[in-house]
Length: 132
Image (cartoon, rainbow, N blue to C red; front, side):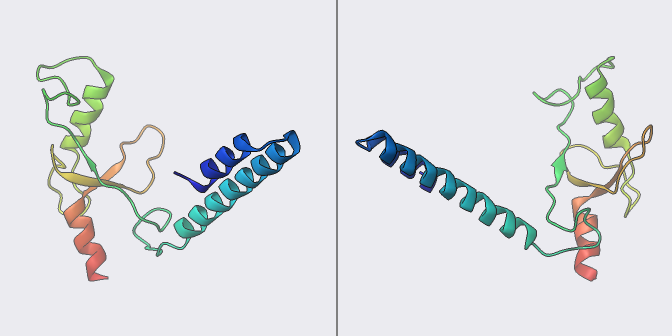
């Protein structure tokens, strides 16, 4: 339970409206303080030149065709299916092999309008980062 929630519970138990308002103000201040601390911790993450924004990234995984979230097995006209298939066929920026399905990857850099995004296998990009 968050500190703000505890403070709000205290506010609800307060006997007078003034006490309730003071407790609610303390709850708000506690939430603002917690948010400020989270943002400071996020900014303190190490900067890396290969990662946009310099912070930590989460790798994506393309689901296999025919699975619950994967593209259709048969050819179809779904925009999402076409995008997933295109990403799977995209060459890795590091090794040149297709990204494929069920394998961790990163989107590297920014795509210009009308262009496909550049992808790298997580293992390839992480190996590059480890060498630097």
